[in-house]
Image 1 (tube, helix red, strand yellow):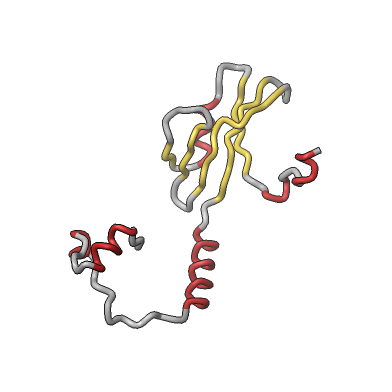
Image 2 (spheres, one colour):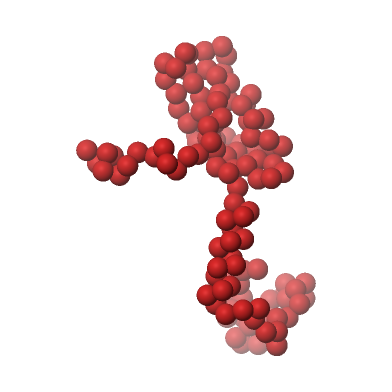
Amino acid sequence: MLITAGDARSAEVGQGSPLDDLVPDPRGMEPVCDEDEFAEILAEMVADEAPRLFAVVQVYGERVDARIAAWGMAFHDHAEVVPVRRGPRMNLLAPENALRMFKFGSHVQARLVWFDPDAATPVEDQIA
């Protein structure tokens, strides 16, 4: 649950948020652990639940050229896809379902490419 600065200010002056009626008041509850352990638990939770990142790449001809057309996140039960150049965001059952949206005639095919951080160009190569 996130607390915004506005929520914190309202609580300081004795005015709770209207949303407080929907969430049990945590005052008086003990923390489950210290801050370091809690941060570690959160990091593990994020690592376990992180979606897989992928790109939808449009390939022109037989490897003549290509461009990233969209980025996506694959969750365990669906995929979210966002086009690079404006267009509707997509909520799909599977990442592969995005491919038909980015095929264009018979000269442009769409390919799903899973993000691999080890494939990134080293920074020193980008500068040269």
